[in-house]
Structure formats: structure tokens, C-alpha cells
Length: 128
Image (cartoon, rainbow, N blue to C red; front, side, top):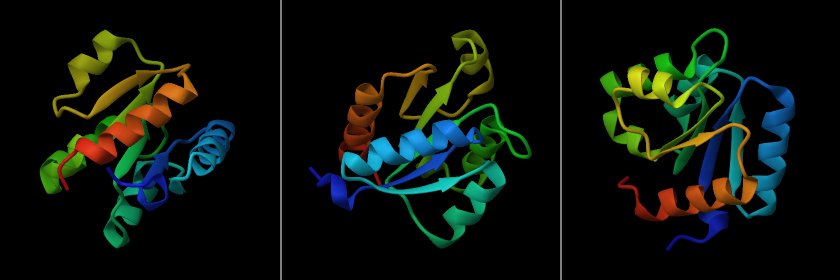
């Protein structure tokens, strides 16, 4: 299993307070963390760097999480298995709109300890 310090996480979240909270918690857990404000910034970051896990909000301006996943499905479907979706959307909406299968869906408000464990599990068990 990879050590947390070697696990790179991209947090894609438009809410500044949640983005800061996740960055702080994940860095304290030993992960290397980068952030993106929306799906467009995330796509650009994926073009220059690879990440072990992507923590993705669904409801964002510009390019939302659903469109981001659609883009990955078309261009790099192997990355879908390394996405942990965070959302306040209803599970029915998420199931209806997510045709690709992310690693996990964690409803908001989420338990931070559970999210950290999901990231560790994903990094250890998802194909690269």
C-alpha cells in the first residue's frame, strides 16, 4: 500500500471554505494536495500532472462535475475509477446522471475521516 505522502489528490471544489477545509485535512493526513476551482481548471491540471485520486464536487459553475466526468469518459476513461464524488445532490439524480462509475460517492455533508479512508482505499486499489 502506498504511503499517504506519496498519494497525490486533486480536490475539485468551487466552494472556497470547503476547498480550504479539504486541503488542510488531507495535507494533515499526509497527502499531496492540489486544488481546482471548477471542472475547467481540473481538466487543465490533468493535462500537466497525474493524480492518484480526484475528489470531485458535482455542482460547480463553468464545467460542472457531470460534464467533467463526461469529458473523462470520452478522453481518459481509466481515470473514472479514481474519482470520489462529493455532492449534496440526491442519490437518484447522481445515479441518473453518472453513467461512468466513479470509485465512490460521498454525500455532503461528509465525514472527513471517512473521506480520508476512501482516498487511501482508492489509491491502494484503483488501477493506474
